[in-house]
Length: 440
Image (tube, rainbow, N blue to C red; front, side, top):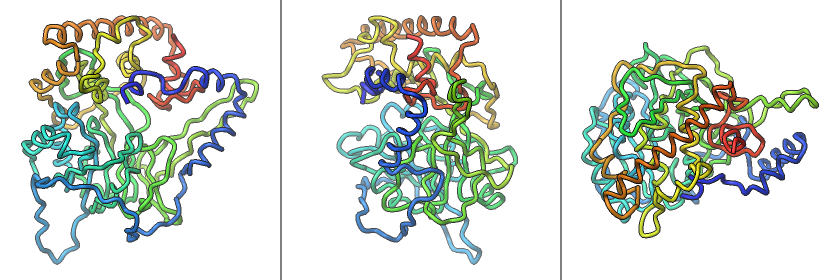
């Protein structure tokens, strides 16, 4: 996993092979591969009843997992809609996780489903830390120990959807904060005033590459791509969620339903295949059009909350006696990890600027815990060596950023930005990752 975070995921021979093929062959190959893998276009998968419980994988539920229990009470009026949020969480998320939970509790989430492997055995400190977070509303928290988490598309994790009982499912990462429209008070008001089956929110990128920055509202930001979603639980296929290109950015849906969508739900790219072919091809599918012009808000994506944050993300799976030290990355600029390359691009990006303002602070940091974890992540063997390595790592990053800044100052940008993926390696020159590696 560490290798996947720091290196291009495809061998150079495959990338070079792809680049030598005509675009029409590449498109046909893409369609063939995705068809074989069960790719879901923005159509609906086979209608699988949500009552079919055979072959469901039942996740282990950590004892004592409920931090606070929702008291639904009794009423003659119809019960308000309920909202469940699932999110992957590791120790690297903890310095920022309290503000994430509090934000979504204020929006009206009824229950949080925290995903990891072997919570009880491998993450007791994480569990203890989360249990000590005080929420502003009576939301519940459940720890789901799942053996086969699909990290690129967590909704496909066996047993996850079956474990969620709320009416709506929210799919976000721990650094993504949904900002509702100014005149919408909470999720219940959103659903009641603007009913839909799918709500899709565009990414708005917030980054800071200072060592110990303290971001404060309002946050300077830029439009990103693509985004995240909330969907009615009943439209999601069970027990098996189909593979979809762009994974967790795409809502899995059943066959045959008439669905209503709100928001900027787009995950396709109009790829112009050179002057020779003189045509635009829609690849990766085009999502369901919104039935109304109303926007359900956007996702403030705190892609990097400080340089310490990006170290923790780079090293999050790097533990034990075989952990890789930060200093091992510093041999030359071409070994700058992919996440740092992307951070440099995002921090230099000036296209489509905007301001994130939710009327309050969104993201807060447990600075003491952040400092403790980042020193552990440096993995140099002593506190003094850890501190020095972090400084050197940041210096190496700034050198790469200066190099990239000189290129971008000439007007150079990824061709499709901001209508293309940040980190996917398409080997076709379509994404930010493709562009960054082409500069080596």
